[in-house]
Image 1 (cartoon, rainbow, N blue to C red):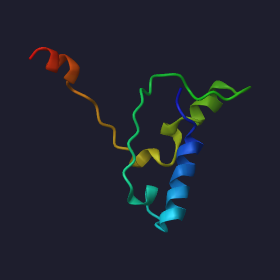
Image 2: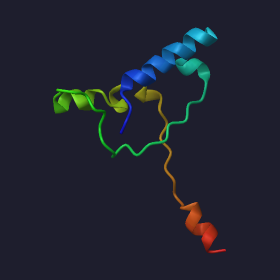
Image 3: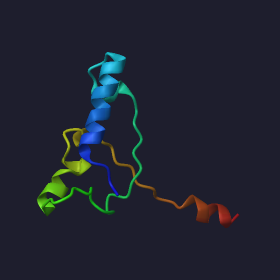
Image 4: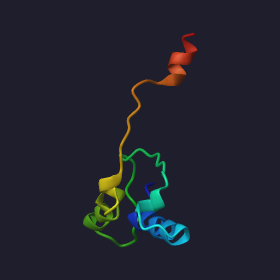
Length: 81
């Protein structure tokens, strides 16, 4: 299940406060690993629009996310040695 976008936004504000740095995530590199095709965040008694609005890619932080994709399955490659 994906996390609600508010949790990542809260982490951003907390890091900014702790490190006294107003850059996003206080210039710390944050690694997010997920399959964005998995289930949406669970919000009790919500509409589908509410669930889509709670996703990370609808957050103000999303414009700064750099998505990297794996091109080679290293487990398979190492088994062939």
